[in-house]
Amino acid sequence: MTWDDYKNRMKASDPVAGEVIKEAEELARVACPSLEEFDAVMAESQHYAAEAGMTEHDISDAIRAVRSRQ
View 1: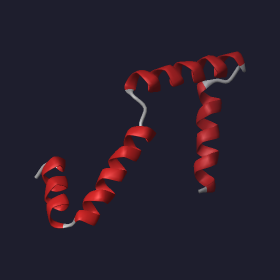
View 2 (view 1 turned 90 degrees about the horizontal axis):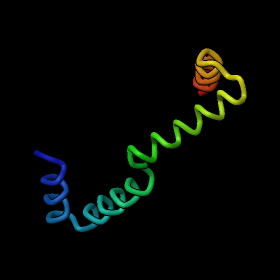
View 3 (view 1 turned 45 degrees about the vertical axis):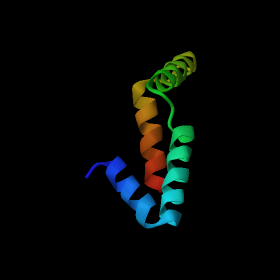
View 4 (view 1 turned 90 degrees about the vertical axis):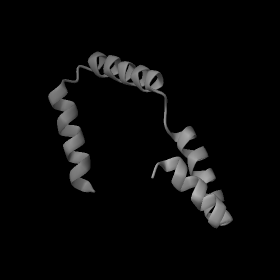
């Protein structure tokens, strides 16, 4: 069963669930950038990190530190 099949079945059998799915899909479109937007943000981030003198090791350490706090 594909996502569209599941979505259509839920909309037909449970209108409330259908609305929840519709709202979730709308939010996902807002929250998920396109690949081009993501690439642009990554390039900008890499530029700022290079200007600040950060290395890949510095960034890995920062990610590891944040993840260990969760």
